[in-house]
Image (cartoon, rainbow, N blue to C red; front, top):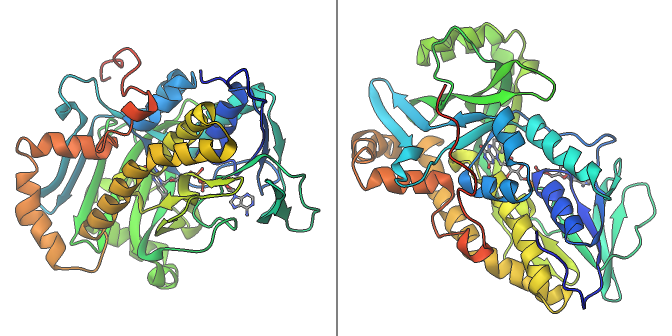
Length: 415
Ligand SMILES: Cc1cc2nc3c(=O)[nH]c(=O)nc-3n(C[C@H](O)[C@H](O)[C@H](O)COP(=O)(O)OP(=O)(O)OC[C@H]3O[C@@H](n4cnc5c(N)ncnc54)[C@H](O)[C@@H]3O)c2cc1C
């Protein structure tokens, strides 16, 4: 574990946000010997949304936190990402193409990941201040205080870590909202089939329609396996979708992917689906005096490549490395950003490049995808490049951070 250098005093640090980034940061900084206070807007800290995919990058951090076994036990191992339009295979990524490595992803419910991190945070001496809606921050000498709605400002901290996500009030607005988002629901995994519990599967019609099923394992205190079920939708069509009625929509989904019947039978009301809007934004300057923005607060993108939570975990680790090595707070945060900047740039660019191929009104891009990219991507070395891409390993994010992709024994064989 990273420790504070003995000749340097422990820092008084505020971590804003109880998402995966904030929780992992609080845990790492506390274990490194700093005093940590976590702030969250909700009265009881809780996650929003359905499932997400952990990649080898994020799992490398969870392993160093001692939490990977719990994640592997609760989540669903994913070996393959597979997508079709009609009879054409347009996406087929096998983690095993990363030869020489026991590679896989993990689908996990947000509540499960949250619970694993939250329990670990509570077992350390981290103060958690819930029901604190942050509105901004202000410098007090060389330190920084937090401002809240309806409450007095906090005491000044040596460092404020902004892990408030993509709509953070601690950074200037930047980037753009994407036209497309998706409706998400957590449903029971249909044990009787027809889905493979180790595959993220999607069906497309051009790039404007997409339905997907991601195995996400179990919820905390439950043995029932779940699936994240998602339907791509333009944000400006959300009202139209609601007005159209649930049965008309189910008919549309069933026409695109008839195997979804056991999923659709679990949906009776539009309220079971949550619309998630995506934004592409990257802060040019993720550090200010006594303040660093990390996770989605620094960079957010559509979940097309499934990297956001993993990048957030890498940012958390990098901050701890930077602070341990830096001669001052400013030097520590500058080092943390330098450790992450290249990987962040590469994946923000790649995600912006790939998103319209799978979610847009374009007719040309899906045609190229179906006729050219799809078939070519099943040939070596494209198979390996794709696996590295979805694993988050392009641009080698782990070596500079002293992390290894597979610090754990090989996973249990497929069941
Ligand atoms: C539908 C969807 C699917 C996704 N799928 C994947 C995937 O498969 N793999 C992947 O790696 N990533 C995925 N992502 C991205 C991933 O969810 C984010 O990158 C990740 O959650 C970022 O973590 P974070 O902790 O930085 O921010 P967040 O998870 O957004 O957490 C921010 C925290 O700050 C709190 N907060 C916000 N504002 C305030 C305020 N003003 N005051 C106080 N508290 C506040 C929030 O309540 C929250 O607890 C997906 C995202 C979406 C929307």
